[in-house]
Image (cartoon, rainbow, N blue to C red; front, side, top):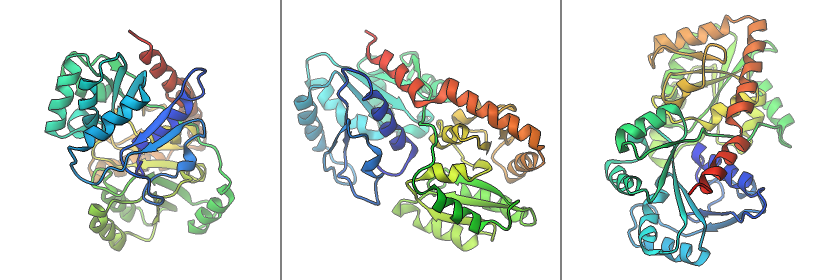
Amino acid sequence: MGWGGAQVFCIQLCNELAKNPGYEVTLISMYDHAPGKHLPLSLVDSSVKFISLGKKQGVNPAFVFTVYRTLKEIKPDVVHTHLHAAYYCFYAYNRLKYPFRKVHTLHNLARQDAPLHGRKLLKYFFKRNIIEAVAISEEVYKSAVKEYGACVKTLIYHGSKAVQPSDTFAETQRLVNGLKNNAETKVLLNVARITRQKNQKLLLNVMRTLHEQNIIVIIVGGYVPEDKNLYNELVSQKPSNVHFVGKVSNVGDYLLCADAFVLTSIFEGLPISLLEALSAGVIPVCTPVGGIVNVITKDIGFLSGDISKEAYLKALKLYLNTSEFDIIRLQDNGKKLYNRKFSIHACASAYDRLYHTA
């Protein structure tokens, strides 16, 4: 339940599925919940039962028995795993003899989604039709077919809950306005964990070049202990037009205060933060990696030619020089695309159909 897009998606999917008559949804976290370290449980709807299993950090082979006992007690109709949780279900899948559906969502390009040993295990279960693999974007799907073969047949686009102002919106608006140079300052928002994958170093380099422009970047996201040195390096080297605010539970409020959503990742699956930005009418300016290329067209936002500083700087300048008329058109297109293809309702409906497919 750490602070990440896959975890947010998992919570939102559970909440949406729980609205279906006849559904009893249980959200199982391998690790005990730690406030501050993990997403707040207030995000989980009261109709969703939450269980944490107390796993310790690192590889823990004996934990498979905890998962087995838990699933044996619950006796689910469907087990839907995310990230590395699937590995700890394999023993239960082989031991539990009654029929139930097993689904695993691939949240990233196959080679980045799991280490080599994990991919070998997943391939065993995918090829024998024990687990249904689900890709979240066209690029993730193509990478999964390349890695696992034709046994991967299912693509369900990532979905997200539409952004709405929270009770702290006014406070967030005052904070953002206090960071702006003046009322005309454009706010570029980066919602991402501080890690080399998200490549905030590129964003800082570009903003250093654009220091005379009336724009600021706000970076919303925390970091895990192994990335503390990277965070310290970025903070010590950041230009004055870049601001770190850490991890927050009201990302939507920041999006509603932003003009553009900026993401400079080296690789991606299909970021939930991008979909939330579309729902809020925030213009995306991103690097062309993973499922991002399946979302951002010239009618939606701006893609750089590659992940170099020169290419991203060019894309950002194109956005900054776009007329107000075209900005409004892009915002409207983004909202329409979100409603048609990337809402959590559309996503949950697709999973509901998959769960009931023989």
